[in-house]
Length: 399
Image (spheres, rainbow, N blue to C red):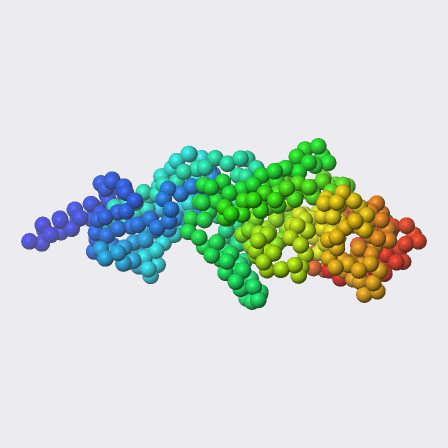
């Protein structure tokens, strides 16, 4: 009796191996065979088919679950993801039966892969590539990475800003929406434009946003950049330092900029949080645009004030401006941006532009006081009679 039993067991092993290789079982979205540890199916939990951009990471991770006959998750089930580029290629289900991996798409318009585990039917994973304009493609190609970073930063920000918990929770809810990345790609949630550069070429401006309701706001941000960028170029005498402007709109609770990339809160959330107690929304956007030129915060605040007001009014006369960060002219206590506005009032737009053009190659750094070299270079660009006053004002520019 021993020999037939051993032969039958060997045959079972062969059958299981063939099944895991997909040679006997037809593929389906949910495998339905059973095996000794209770697993009867592998289910695709995430969206299937997934939309993505050819040659890029699928914006949403592929998520599957191993379940028993009662629909309960089965832990520590080995899974192999095959017929595609996955990270990782193998996975174990967690204590609730879930596992997830990232999928790097190829250039085909539609593509399939599979997840297999010995003893259950292989499950087909499907993806399709969405055609997007060339200026949008780099951003959507990075969407997978950006969403992870935005979620991590938002979680970190809650402890730093406890007074704004409700706004952080709102963003977390958006970032945790199942299939968010695929919906952004599939729904063409982006706005496009272009700024006329002094180089004669157009600088493409693209904004990607998470929620369809933000479309009009994101387009407004694009138009704002279109108006502001030529004013910046004219003042600094340089074409914009990057060939494109990329705006991640509405994913975050705050704002950051540099390198031609801006991550900015949506206007609705910003206005609700600040309620007029801080800088208006439009100058804040221009501020982040200017950071690609100037890292130093206070020097950049002046660029924000100048750029926004000139773009809006067409006037370089400070008396025609209204977005002045609470500046009161000539006050003894003026420091920071207020000290720089005092200097502008004293020397005028052309000399101020000369001073900025002189210090721009020195790249004063964010969060640091002006170095002696930067202050001296700035002051040297103004007429000799004004240098003592300018130097005294620059000493009040802290960071």
